[in-house]
Image 1 (tube, rainbow, N blue to C red):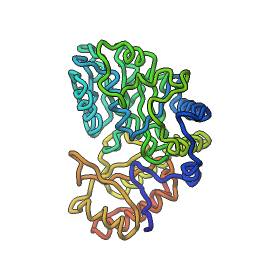
Image 2: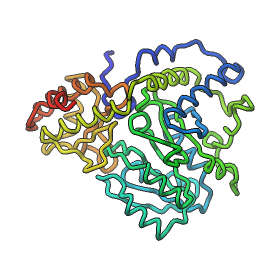
Image 3: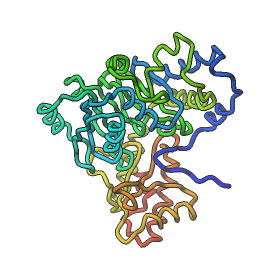
Image 4: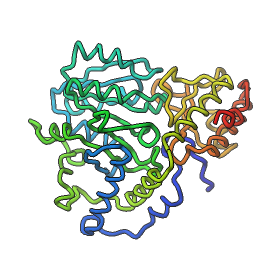
Amino acid sequence: MKRPLIMTPGPTSIHEEVRRSLSEQITNPDLDMHFFDFYKETCSKLQRVLKTDNDVLILNGEGILGLEAACASLIEPGDRVLCIDNGIFGNGFGDFARMYGAEVVYFKSDYRKAVNVLALEKFLDNDNAFTVATLVHCETPSGITNSVEQICQLLNKFGIISVVDSVSGIGGEPIETDKWKMDIVLGGSQKCLSAPPGLTFLSISEKAWKKILNRRLPIAGYYVNLSIWKDWYQNREFPYTQPINDIFGFHTAIERWLSDENPLLRHKVIGEAARKSLIEAGLELFPLEGFSNTVTTINIPENTKFKDVFNSMLEDHNILIAGAFGFLKDKVIRIGHMGENCYEDRLYVALKALDNVFRKNNVKLNVELHKAFISKL
């Protein structure tokens, strides 16, 4: 079976060096003392990516595990939690908070724009009695990046613990965990760092640890209980057996990112060129502002069906693109330009195929997408 070129907003392609690392000889991660050091070294490399001195953990599960673990570990029944909502994932954070007994209050912002920080500040001036606030760095379904720098520093001013889903942001968007006073930052292996899906990683501030370790009630759960990780290295004891080969591969993927000359600039340049080429062609982006550097979301042209575009891209060009879900289902196309997919040749091939498919579906384009893309670099 010939695998398609996956130009989706995660999982991404992975480099051959990462594939080789996945096949390294296994050991027993619970008994081999060298693996404790290897795991810690991998976390230290993530600290460099996140620009933090806070503790970093790697958990055995896709990115949703980190999101739920943060909610389970921080939230106690009756806690007021602010859900900062300008998209599908931002809104969904509230569901997880409610699972663990939170009284959820939503701050809603325009779903086609980045969170309105001035409006949020005015909201908090009137009501700031929140224990925790949840927010999304990059709203992957809509292709919007929020100003976590301003939002987290604002939350910190009111003593509110911030939980930031940066699964589609870390590695492709600027992030300064300590400088921006971010408490829990959540990431996933399969996005901009380009390792296989299956691992969550997160940083935890001292303020967040204090809340986790000084609860009135015990945490409801074990696998989502972050407190069981405290002092794991000093005790040389993992809470459960680690997915050793996944971590081997992830370690290599992180090293590749750290050795890249300027991965954030690469994502910015490629993302901007992709957007400009689509707009010049006469297509409409879903976001009106706050454009993501890791994923571009395009409104489906009139008289065109998503399934026709998706099927033709896959069957005629062997390229996998994404749609969306929720209120965006069958209304948008998403192209990922993150990690190993964020290179000129990948976008050129994908946009050339998309140009062909649109024209085949009688979509009028002002320019050839792939040629316009190259001209914008």
